[in-house]
Image (spheres, rainbow, N blue to C red):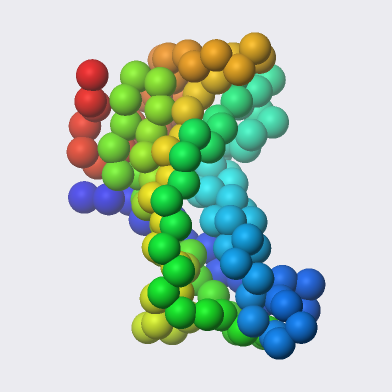
Amino acid sequence: MHKNFFHKLKVYYEDTDAGGVVYYANYLNFLERARTEALVTLGFNNKKIKEQFGTLILVKSCNIEYKISAYLEDELSIRSFVKSFTKTSFFMHQFISRGDDLIVEAKVHLVFVNNEGKPIRIPGTLFQDFKPYFCDGIKV
């Protein structure tokens, strides 16, 4: 079963265009915030991962599908979960909703890299901490 992470946010004026509609690129910021908060619920953050393990987690690719628009002062919920993982990366699915309305669906491929930007294996202890949240097992 997937471990779901939830993050709530409110749409502010700065997130919208002149018509009060969320500017499409801002959904990427919303998704990033939700991923960061998911790490925090696991007892990590990006700074700690860099300092403790010498690695960064970078977005390799993002497939985003816009379903309907969000608007100024909407209350949004972002559901995130890890779909699968490899030795060096993991795949996260994220959904932005307003109540029962699905606004955005995203599939994000995240990779662990060293300070030179080269992919590296997920560090052992970090891998063990994340493993309960990786639902579909490892792909080699």
